[in-house]
Length: 157
Image 1 (cartoon, rainbow, N blue to C red):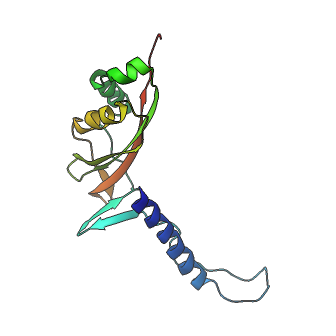
Image 2 (cartoon, rainbow, N blue to C red):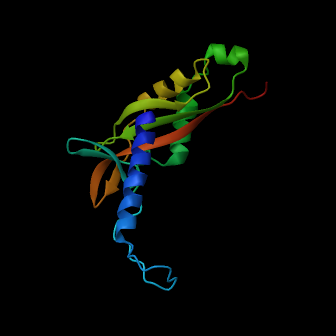
Image 3 (cartoon, rainbow, N blue to C red):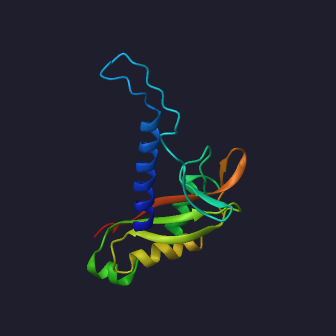
């Protein structure tokens, strides 16, 4: 998380510096033309060799059958942890993972958790997920970092 945050800050500073280099010095003339050649937003977050990890792509990764099927998958596979049940712990666990070019999920991490075994259960369930449809950029499958909440709610208590 710190690495991603530092990368984002560094990227923003670099993009701002590049954009400022393109703005001509024309004094205080508010009608002067402003030209910005540098991209404002970079879509890649990191790279490992030839496999860059994207956060924004033309076509987002998706669970086979769509979000409705994904929620059904979660509902049928999540086991509410006993400690969380006893302590009446509820909330959302935010999970980050990479959808690989072949649709498999890797680098599964808890971004923000609620404890009492819920974090571990969210990681376990995402880990047993079937392969997703990969993200597409320029007509090719690419690695995409994905973050999503998984809700733990006690019903009828």
